[in-house]
Image (cartoon, rainbow, N blue to C red):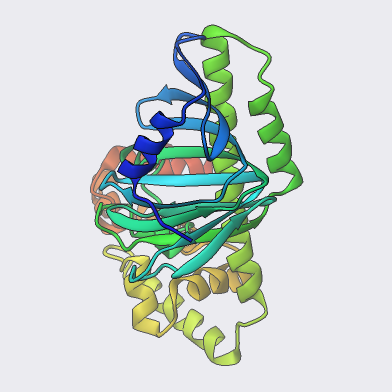
Length: 333
């Protein structure tokens, strides 16, 4: 099987091009294309939903096997793919953290962060390859939250660094909810501005379902593997948190201190204490704050600082969310 480069593919594609149609802004913000050449008959549409978020649908009917060397540039993006039909084989030699030979196939979804690598992509003949792809820039991904503790470690490492380790994660079978959302995206009933708003909401919904599936799969795997020694270490972690409310360790640091990986630590807190690590820390801080407010020896600002809040307003907001009243109201009561 001969492997061709991106440049050779483009040259052969142009030389054998029989039909070509490309339209921009058919709905004000999208691009649609069709073409036929020596390898396949292709159809695609792509929509820039907002800066940092794009969704694409690709349908290729292959009548000849294509084996192509592809370069992923250094763009810092998360890519999510949902395969509706066909199979796609990928060879990624010498890329740490990524299998050297893997398949992406119909009925499954994938999430990956693979900047600045070369790989070989193989699309077999006599098949229809259909998939939806979401491209999410890291700056937008980070803008949704500062609390990354609930996410798998691969994503936590993207919180602050664009040079985090590469990964390719097979997320499992496309669920019924995902299928419904995919159908909604591919059969959008709206046009213009409302279409863009609708597709953005559905695209984000699809990402949420995928991330939730990843977390659930990790959690269900760990539920059955929490041994007695692990339980003791989780209790030790709770003690460490209770002693360091003003300056708590990060989740990764806490896990290292007690000799657990972050997944087991998070699962242990959920199983044993019914809350997240951050949720437990927050509850302890609020209980200590109540005690200090009752003692009346510190101002509200002093209480906020003592329980680990640099901002008095953030402390007041957290206290009200926990107890339904501000610290000042609680003290007066």
